[in-house]
Length: 326
Image (spheres, rainbow, N blue to C red):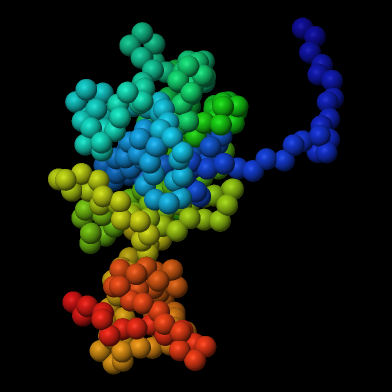
């Protein structure tokens, strides 16, 4: 057989139109790209994504960085949970508009990452978010996610689909059992899955806090890393907590977790309130820095304690006289 020869084609960068990345949730979930959400089983990955979806369906966001002007449609494929007894009740608990969340029927044929029905579904529903839960279930027959060439081919096609329709595609993945390894190498399958995704989020338990789950970004090729977040799970459902002081290593358990920095910051401010009614802000920032408390966390603690700032002789002071000591 003669080998088919492909002519050389070159593209000038001057012919490429520059574009800004648009975000479903800055800087965690971009439109037009692949995002991976990974973690151990039963640590809250699916719960987080379904609650994000529930907000999107109503045109709302978890926080101010999830900006939507109108409700959007979402496609959610789950190979592990029953739609009637697990997925639908979770969505109802989250207050989702179930008219806007759609599922490709897999009764006649199982879906894969390279299935043409994915593109047809995005076109038909105009979905802005597609979720495959978990990655392992959508490989297709005979494909090995541990083989780099096969993984790269699948994710390349999926990434092209996301870009073509500016849809945020989210892949949910389980972690392997290699304790102590870096987060990138604990995702199931070839490292190529991690390589092709533009954003990777780690979801895991917080040691000593049975109801709290942390969300830590471990990869971001499009912007600066996002600040770690957290949410709580209880009988009443999902509660978004926002900024949380924790690292990926602490979530993975490879190093012991530090004391919660927010509580540490509040404790510092309460102690200072016992000593003075007002202290210069720069002095407080310096004291917090010595204890490993970030400026952002200190500002959040200040807001939660109702502390006001006042300018005196060209210097800013924090008024501590009304801080609650308990």
